[in-house]
Length: 377
Image 1: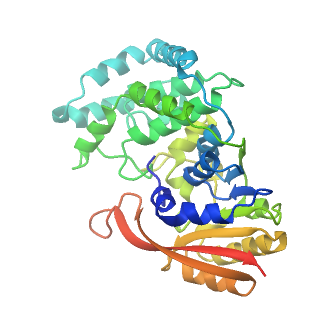
Image 2 (image 1 turned 120 degrees about the vertical axis):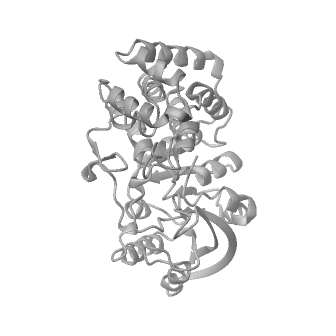
């Protein structure tokens, strides 16, 4: 997964140990901003603790739920090949299926600009809103057809439904033609053309097979739950035995701008799109107070009040220096110090700037992150 602020490295570098020390056998581990689901899955796979993963965005809880909501593995061969075969058949039989396959087979860097224009025109003729929105932009028409068909071919209520959905989301993230997440696609008439072609040539079926097979072998030690919800509201329902993991947004731009393609796949609905990023309407995209600089501090203060009232333990990760939403690890520590016993750890990591532009900022930057453990006094 291309994901801003991924915690995988931190989990191996000390965060995992800190979490393990604070877990209580009578309580839950509640990941309030689960994002890519890496922390929620780590805890559920390594500890005998019930994990709850929540997020404002559906794709995030879909990724976490595929692992934490099962306590046993799945046999990919019992459902995967037939699901994939059905999706390929549906893509081939689509009104633009033959033409999309032809465009896919003829992709060449020498003709990519003209082919991209043709791809967008062809995708606009499709009856699938996903293909119309993203075909010829983030994906080739054939890739978009396959992703849509895979999503539509998932059997509701099946024991493999959530694994299949997560595999489609992961595949889209791996293959998407964009510099950083899905803020905007590569353009065929710029120096990004080779990257566009590279992305469009990625094999959707190969990737979804690998993703689904991998997910089948992963599961929780204790079955948990994942659902969409507001972190502050979820925090109000904690109890003194719980450990809340808090990794809130640090960007002044709503995360829904960077993950709208994944969100559309998770929901199964896109609607009309506009702008350079092919965004759905603002009303249909989740927004967070934590990404509004004038409101982020108040939102965090209210979150801390909920944690304090519940008596739960909290583990917070945040860059030490000030981020674009005007929060910093230092400021968060100061907010918490009046009501909690605070333990601070530091970790040097690299985070994504959502693509960068090589002129004003690099795509990856080294930052010092703080891990702040809070216990009520």
